[in-house]
Length: 170
Image (tube, rainbow, N blue to C red; front, side, top):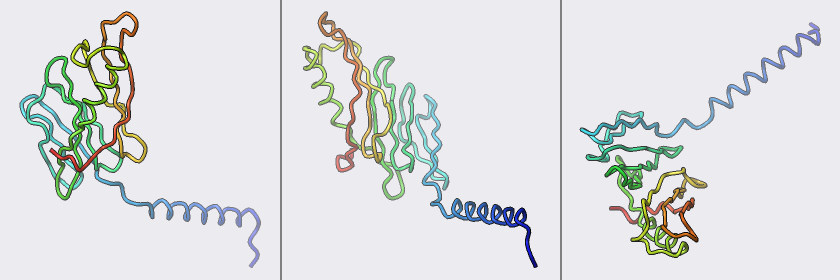
């Protein structure tokens, strides 16, 4: 039996499509999928695709959650006062998220203030926000902003990468 060229091309096309679909199905299943919910009454709760639900922050005025691609890290902007936002990090260990201290944040504020020619305590409206995860999701990029009150260097506006250190768990 002789197969015309046109039919042969169709068969090859179908075969290639099937191979592509097989390759797609062989890819690793997605990691933990996280859903967060927040209310001032109940705080921040996260639930994953297996049904695990955990309250991470009990009291807050508001939060913004940034989840790593694999769901292992949660970064949270926690609004504690109308103008005070604290960046908090949570790492999934075993069967739950545990908070990890980002102690480097204070030191970075001090360095940025010194570079601007002002003491850290004299910064006006210091604020920090999460820009995202760094390469390999082993660090976080934070956006530091503050007014200095100085004419020569009126504001700090800097994005700094800080390693996520797991051994300093709170």
